[in-house]
Length: 305
Image (tube, rainbow, N blue to C red):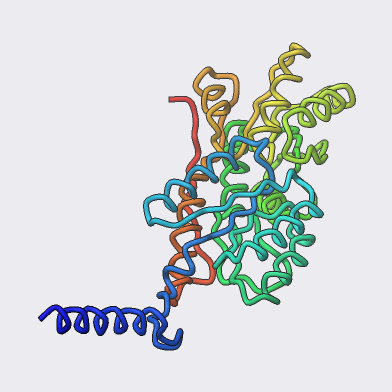
């Protein structure tokens, strides 16, 4: 009886060992969805509240959907942006979301991802070259037009205006400027100064200081983003002059300035939604679903309540 029991145990152990040494080809492959749980996000700069909010929206959606989101900051440097994309390629992300530093310069980074068959989605700013599966952004032309029409209304159809432009080469700066200038071209509004301040508050302050010294009469300022608008507002306060300021983005600081009656208005984007939609559509791409080539996000004008 003992001999039979021993033989039985030996047979069971041998079967177990054989099962453990089975050929790898018989093992079940890991589902593709499990292999593609990592998404990359390259942000132009995290030194701007708008893009911080965009990042937070993306992170919240990634957590909700059970995906890992790798976030890298380009610090407004196209070379750093390229390095970030190369880093994400080595990390084997399934999709790369890019908020470009420059719509022209980002083309090389997009093409690098294309070369590794990694889909790319652009957020807020577009890419002028390379293959992008979708672009998610506000309608910046419509937003610029909205700002222009508001200034025309507030000034009674005529006046002298300063335009503070964003980073040259970005689609956001180009489109917002286009919408604004399209709106005012048939009015009595005259643009007496137009200068870039790179979407930066400190540069907005210094550029506006110089313009105030050169221009004795200014009725309004349109800034391509709120950071420049807030910098311009600071310069205007210091000068003691009364000039209407309209921004773009509806950041927390800008909305507070509007509510306080310091800024006249700001065009409200939804950066958290842009980030969230970026991740949501990246997941659709991973799952092989079709998505729209362009996904617009609604805008509205924020004025004092």
